[in-house]
Image (tube, rainbow, N blue to C red; front, side, top):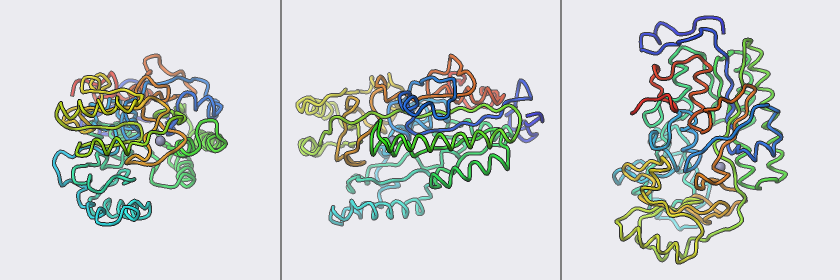
Length: 410
Ligand SMILES: [Zn+2]
């Protein structure tokens, strides 16, 4: 970059580039389910020499991706699991109660659920990721979908600015891959745009490794084939980005890893025993709402069934920087030990690989790889946004992005 890029408009709004006018151009490639061991098993995805691992978050991709983009922990941006407890009943999902009028064999059909999700997105104006999985229809009355927006194009997620929006406001040319596009088309589009528009910051997105690892597990032929395709696409994208000239830095980053499933826990008997308790069964956690007695009983039932895992009460959730204000994801939850899976859960059936375990599990770590040395203080998912901004010459604190350790109190 040689030209001054902080536009008059950006300056007026209080956002400005400080420091060197010359900055690097940055290509960030987000690879879903790229943990440290997946990166090694994939041969480094194109041989970026500098590699590291990042502490992740408690929850799933819908929490990890906002942390990567904003540099804030889930307690700040408020995202953790796809479904939360609505502030009041009769929220955005409530109209779906009608699914409960149909026989279960019918309303659990993927085709019907996808059609219902489509109608919901249209009528409620949702632009984020919507999937109704196998959520029992009677729960829609009190459930909510926190992800209402397109994460790559939203100015803020849960009130916190993303590094993409900080760069856009600073007047930089920014490209973010349209995540809604099928994989192959999205990458073709990405490479074409990188060549034609020469963005200062590009955010590419690979989903297929996650899908392959869920279906077939680590070390599978399917995962290896997916990793090879991702490697080729990254190489093509780097080449396309470099054709724009200037100094280019590539950062490949995941949101979590993947654990192989060794132990499938059928929760149906437990659910029978806990009938009447407000709860949600994710693939790796059972989340609870209720008074102390209710929670104590739930905890006792988990122990009685000899489930291996951890009971996380409010204090434990605060320690993990999970959102607790209003208990959107449960007043307490039981998270299975790594390698175990609830199936059938409210979000799916048995699979070979899963993530969403406690923070000290190897699969809770994300991998990072770059052609530039990864800074020493970039040790968590929440630190990446600050690094990207500093490479672009953006003063994050002044821009109000509040990313990572650079951010002030809310
Ligand atoms: Zn996944």
